[in-house]
Length: 261
Image (tube, rainbow, N blue to C red; front, side, top):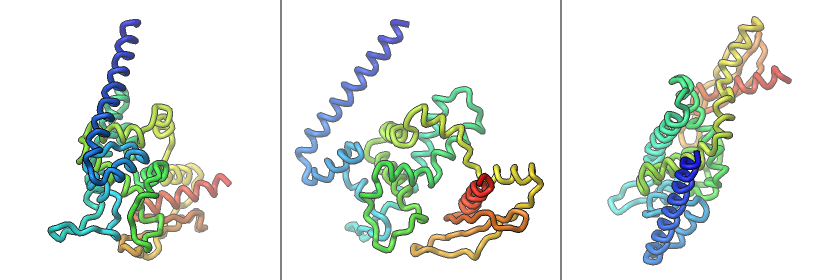
């Protein structure tokens, strides 16, 4: 037992020394960069020791504020968002597979879906104050367009391109997974509100019906869905979202709150 403790302590010490060396090396390199203020700002606010600031500048640029490169290509965070979505999903899957060795495939899949869903990533983006750094047009004001969660994904894509997969995993663990106590809350919190509502309806012999309002488009031409959930012919919940599934979940959540009230 004593040997194991010493090994763990040595491992932690070496990890700290390695980090300090990386930090020192990065700060020395920073002296020779013209835009070092941008690098320092990224480090102080998000803890990222960037090698190439351009990845992050693009990651923080909404398509309403696209930049144009020398070849005439429009640069914004949509492509990095696509990449970051896959990076987060893979990093979360890696963590769950390594740390929950007794978990079933179903439990792993359900937990991963909770950690990568847009609502959760929106909240993480606010926790890290990423909303303060996004470059977006004045017309982009609605929280329903998920700008913040999308930008979180784009930043993870930028970290992956700039620092590699291992560093990406570290930030996923730091921002999204956080700690074992937080993971316990995620694992044991039921988020499938529609399934809970359907189960309640069957148990209490209630008739449930979801009625979708006509589909609309936001200012960025993204689809927007609204739905009412009826219980025995009475509107008991209303929800909206970028997808029908998201709208149904939000409506079901409101209905469950009204039932408890």
